[in-house]
Image (cartoon, rainbow, N blue to C red; front, side):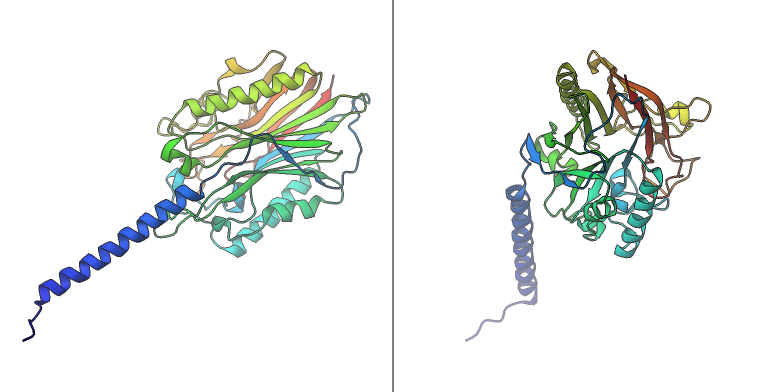
Length: 366
């Protein structure tokens, strides 16, 4: 005689099976993230590419050189874009077409600067968030005929299934250095980062060291950096800056000329909120730069015009609005004393292409 199974028991069995499947899926995904996690090796040799117009930098002619530094924000941050990690809405660029269109505009802007050197950060080459548009190839191809290049991978993360409604996915991004003179060699250095679960959110971080021959036998050392942004430990960025300072000191002691530039993710002006008129007390990521770590023979150079202050970065918790967006200067340079700085200023684009704006440095060798 067959026993009749009650509807309630059937429902409970179905629920149990669903829960078991969910546990397996979630457990499998967590295992994948932990197993797939990796950091790139420190002191990783990079292979320069491109074709420079000059074999070496002339330090005897008294020429003024021009350098552009810009975090291009993986070509997603138009003035209408907000990012979920900053408290905004989006985890990806608006579309593949929008990413390509913005990348072309960024390249046009870079070309319009007609700089001798470029330090560019947050250049994606296979990320879900930028629809796998190869931004590295686009920039390198646009400058291949007159510039040498060196590219270092900043982070190469597993597929992150967050936010649930539109996961940011896999992130592959790097920092790109362009030089109108030959790059004799380039090295990727791994910054210290947080341990534990936080490392999955802030990803890997690095800086690259590119050596460019000068006609007096020395080297111009361009350091391109992108420090951590979303740490829960405020000491991490300070540790990164100390590592950077030690590298600068080492190169300076060799007699080389050193320019370290990029996205410091620290307030280079000390109190940008009071300067630009929107308080930053609700944003813990932009801590004042620890000037005490700057090595002897070097100085911090931040773009600032007291008569017309222009920020280098906006917090992307909402579309661009100068009345409400927190604005800060986190892009600038540490430069050794054998280099004379003529000017350092932000190009005001009203954040049309990125959450950062280009910083222009003009310098000559002493």
